[in-house]
Amino acid sequence: MARMQWYYAKGGTQFGPVEDSELKARISAGEVGPADLVWREGMGDWTPAGQLAELRTVPAAVPPVAGLPSAGPASPYQTPAAPGYSGGFAPQVAIPNYLWQSIVVTLFCCWPLGIPAIVFAAKVEGMVARGDIAGAREASDKAKMWCWWSFGSGLLVIVAYIAFIVIAAASGNMSH
Image (cartoon, rainbow, N blue to C red):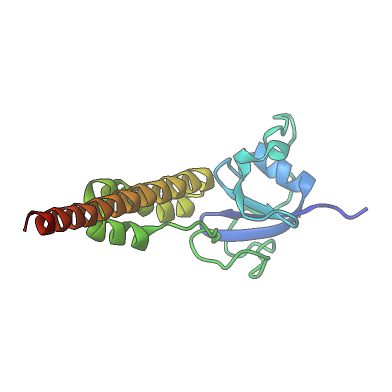
């Protein structure tokens, strides 16, 4: 039976592969925290370790694995090219931020509704960098919602304005 191989990212450095039991031992020892990102084959994105039920249920009595080096630049557990990881501060997760859309609808549609869209859109990248994937997805969804509200409101005002002009022009022609 093939053993599950995990990768984890801590402090901008990626480590792995490590076996399931070794990762759980590192979590129990505090070497891998709940906000540190983990990935294994079959997962779509890197995820904070604390969000995975299979890793949250690690018993506290599991001792750390003796003889393993600490996470550092000379660690033999570093692998530069694990799937889905491109290096840098944190693994890259594709979550749209809707920033340019927020700016466009703020300028051309309805600025009172576009401003919250910009605020939420600006939060996405920082949350991804901190490993708060759930928060980033929520901010992305809110930015998208406010973009649509702003666009819809702007469109409604334009349609009402055109209808007013048409009605005014029609009533002006009838009086002459």
